[in-house]
Length: 104
Image (cartoon, rainbow, N blue to C red; front, top):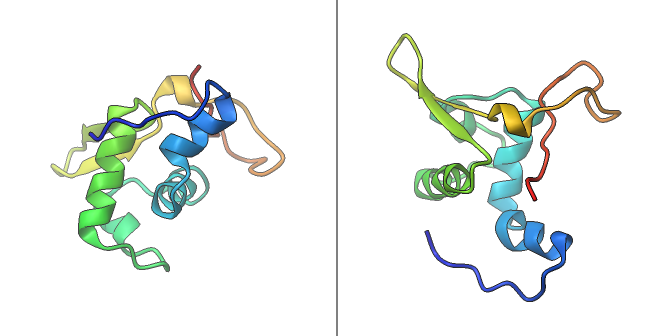
């Protein structure tokens, strides 16, 4: 993974440096709000992300500890938010329990 040169120690700057590109935010959106777990699910999103970019963003999120990967019973790699990134309901997703929490 490419090293990111942070412009400041501000938490908002940190989040933007790591998560601020279009594709990463769309992958997180699909995880949190659409419940997508498999590579093909992300690939079939309306925005049409290229496979090489999708693979890179998923690897980057996994390296940062934001996403975890597991093999399901059908030998597919499922992407999930790890327990530390989950918390209770929010106004944006009142029925859900998988809202993103930035680690500090």
